[in-house]
Image (cartoon, rainbow, N blue to C red; front, top):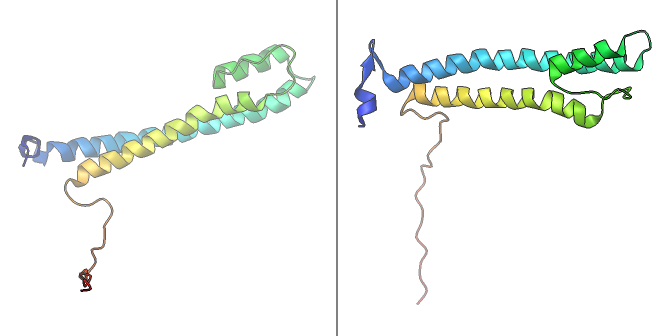
Length: 133
């Protein structure tokens, strides 16, 4: 066994403690990323109505879109392009996937030497091929 598995803090082994910490932080950040995705998608939906309507101040609409999503809208634009929508939403989706992967890494560290996904072993024996003479 390696030295890291023998080192204990408060009765827990260090990799198990580190795995629990990573998994907990990953769950919190996963839900935070989901909220961020919802915020960005609602800003994109509001931008569609805000930019196309005469009732709203166009400068305020552009400022709101820039603040929430980081996407800059040109002065003569009346709707968001597909590229702008993608650049507003894609980073949040990427962060959701990053935190899901961090959660799986944390669970793998927490479980230690146990298998993360059980793999069934075959019971049958492989037969040797007979050679012809």
